[in-house]
Length: 243
Image 1 (cartoon, helix red, strand yellow):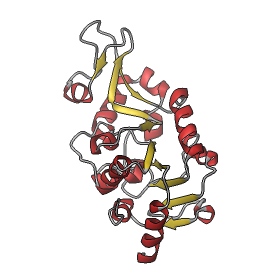
Image 2: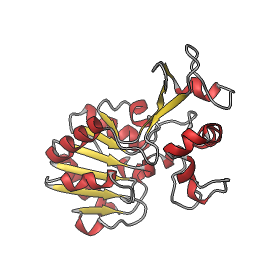
Image 3: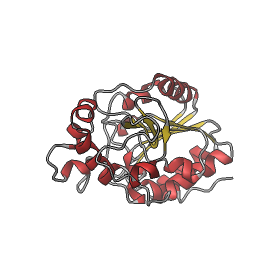
């Protein structure tokens, strides 16, 4: 692994427009479970599969059950950014990293100090009344004891600003992500199996010099990368020096 770290360091040193594209594996080292690994949400027992509960139709038809799962498994607020989040923020501050494109909804990139973050699947930290659009924080939702959280102004149902199954991604976020990736000279992909579409298809817009993949398990794109490292992303990035 030392040789691969040296190669990664060299790539970062000679790159001036780095974009990071990340998935659930970036946050697992902070204690947030992913969906597909052993111990992930897909392997836990609920009355309905997570894909069903986290769908638009389920939210509309069984809102209370949606919130029971969402508060227990998705609305995780007692976690902190890990070494990967912190190193990415450091790279941005140094002018090396131009944007983070993330599939995560936990807000840990911003908590670490990253400024330009494109959240493909939304954020648990933004919640709106479906009737009057009043904003509510994640803390408000977490502390609300009602089976279905409602607006304090008009009584409308509050909906998290996260992209549920059956919902489309935000067009503006997609456009910004495509623009960042297509203009990057280095794309670092980390903590994702690249199995979730349409988000994973964004990497096809990359035309730069260096493609780097960092993921605990191999992906279908490893052979296409200039460098593939199958290790924990926090451990990998923490070894990088930012000048």
